[in-house]
Amino acid sequence: MSSLLWTVITVLFAFWIFGQVMSFGGPLIHLILVVMAIIIVINFLTKGKATL
Image 1 (cartoon, rainbow, N blue to C red):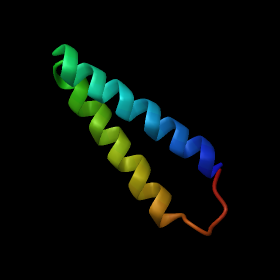
Image 2 (image 1 turned 90 degrees about the vertical axis):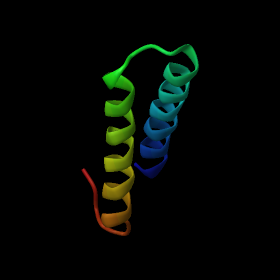
Image 3 (image 1 turned 180 degrees about the vertical axis):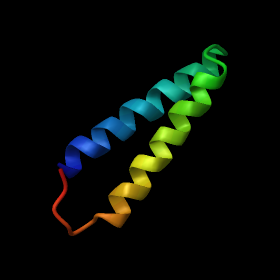
């Protein structure tokens, strides 16, 4: 599950960087960044526990 989580984080980060470079997406880019941050926080809080 952890490797899947890091894959999702990597993909979201890549989309965020792509959006910054190409200057499109507006608020969507910031939403992707917030989702990425939430996923990282959840990962740290549930580390060592059973996850869904």
